[in-house]
Length: 129
Image 1 (cartoon, rainbow, N blue to C red):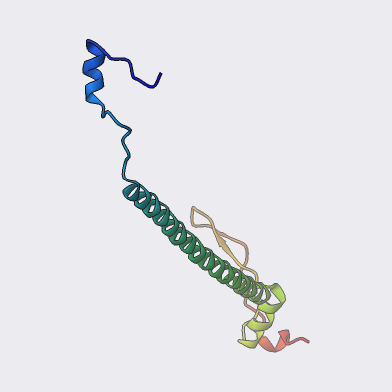
Image 2: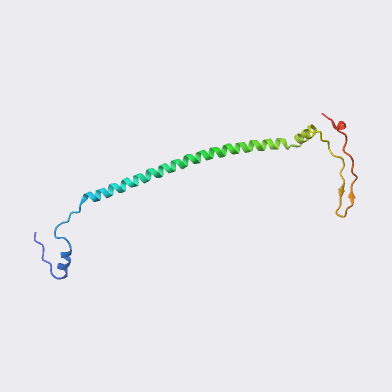
């Protein structure tokens, strides 16, 4: 039972192509290749993780900056709204010496005048509270 049967013909020709004994491949190059692949993969993961962390910090800074700018924009809009209220406009106009206008007159497309214009009242008559 220990002897191998003898091959003939085509099987013999194919058998000659393979080594007779059990071939042992060198383990060192394979182990080195596996270690290098694992090490390279770990380094790539470390670099990717670092890049993602850096992007996260930048995103956080940009979100804080956006919040601050939004708050500033809202404060400026409140200032604009307070300056453009009718009472504030009237008070500022009086401080500048402006008076309300009189009755206006309008010109029609054909050149006719509609309405009777009147002069603005004097500033002394309008000085109120």
